[in-house]
Length: 376
Image 1: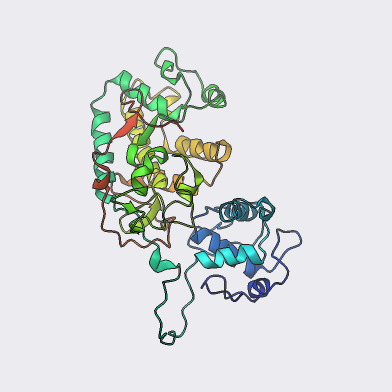
Image 2: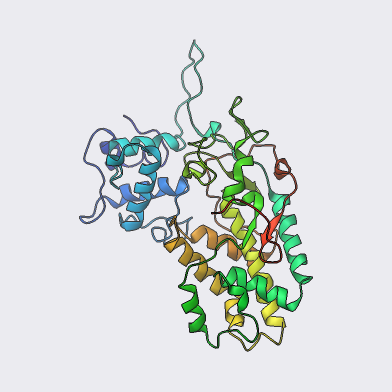
């Protein structure tokens, strides 16, 4: 086959692989770094977070090293595009894997095609990939509401709410004045226990409540659109099925300020808003200034929690994008977004639907606002 994508077709090494040549394998021995960079760029463009492979940031050049992170991203991609063929999950970029990558990427610019006397159906490509609804106003409003609701809580309610999200252990509400550990290491030891990760969410952005992004009026199977299309690669799966977040689709995606994101990524902006509320509370209240909670109610602690969860959770994945959203709203408030591009870049923001398609937006911040939703 001939490579068609703008990212992959520039590499002579990959063109040789596409023609049946030797696959690109993890180092050692080291392979052509330019070919590896093309693979890394392709995976990043399809939404696979690879922070170690892009040491100077997601907009800079990748390192061209086929290490464990790149290999892991390749395997994750192979599992999604070859779901019933485990033999293809080898972390090696051969002809079949390269063909799948190439088909999902924007095509290189070329001369205009000759007129075709017979109309043909459109090929899958960027023009067929549409992001989900624009939720810019809805997330800004709900995040502003979280801030105002928090300010109205009592001291004990604030401590309990902040402990729930920043000491995410069952029974963390017992860590009130009089029961607060005396040093930071003791708190870290508690975090090594079983975590409770269900303490916060904006419900329409929560994966388990994201069915609205896969049904009318956002997505109508009969029309294959108008938004969040292509939809889930496994539409019959349960609320947490991986097919709903398949980077080869625009399923479970939303627009924020003209960029397309996986809705769960945007949800980490909620965490940033909540952590900032707790941080300001700890700085302003004299009863907390000399306790370990002053260090725990902080952006630095929040980053640590995200990285630990993404590394050791049930579905390990990169922490770069969740951290970026948390940092953005912590520092910039309800209208802030990360400086990095959206993680569904091939999904065009041409959908006219908005977050109003969900109905009334709400949030969870246990225990004072417990809500109800499917468990993770």
